[in-house]
Amino acid sequence: MTRILSAAPRRGFLFGLAALTALAACGNGVGTTRGQEIDRQVDQTLNFMLSEYSGTADLKDKASGYLVIPVMSEAAFGVGVSGGEGALRIQDQTVDYYTAASASFGFQIGAQQYSHVLFFMTDEALTQFRTSDGWEAGGNLQYAFNDQGQTLNATTNSLTSPVVVAIFGQAGLLAGANIEGTKYTRVIR
Image 1 (cartoon, rainbow, N blue to C red):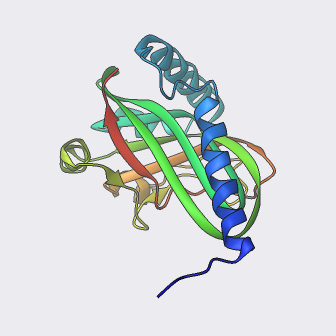
Image 2 (cartoon, helix red, strand yellow; image 1 turned 135 degrees about the horizontal axis):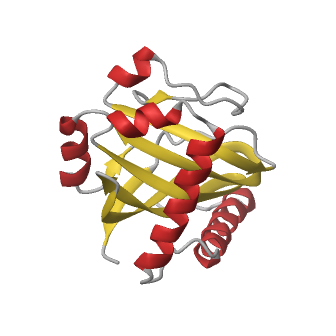
C-alpha cells in the first residue's frame, strides 16, 4: 500500500526540520564543548532569577539539586520545536551538563526564548533524574509562576513537590511557556 502525503504535512515537516536546524545554530552552547561558557550562562541566569524573583531563593536553598537551562529557544509554524542546554548543580557545583528538547504539533505560530530551572526538592527525585536514560518532564510538575509569568512564587505546596519548575525571562511572539514533554539528556562537556 502506497501512502501519499499531501503538501501541508510535508511543509510542516520541512519547516520543523528547518526550525530545528536554526535552533542548533543559536549561540546557546548546543553542540559545543565549552562547558565553561555554559557555566557562565548558568551563573548569569541564576543571578538574574535570584535578584528578580526573591521567592526562588528558598527553592534553591532547599533543593537537593537544580538544573538550569539559561536559554530555551522555541519556534513553531504548525510544528513546534524547542531546545537548549544547561548544567545540573548540586551544592552550587556543576556535576553534569544536559540538553533539553521537545516537539509539538497543532495550531501554533511564532518564536520565543525563555529560561527555566528545575528544582529537585527530594534526593529521590534528583537520583531518578540522574539515573534515567533521558528524563521527560511530565504533567505532575509544580510550576512556581503565575499565568502572566511576571511573579515567581514558591508556596508551601511547591516546597513539598518532588520537582518544581521556575520559568522566566520570556521574550518572543508565542504565548506562554510550558516544559511538559521536554526531554532532558545528559551530555559530556
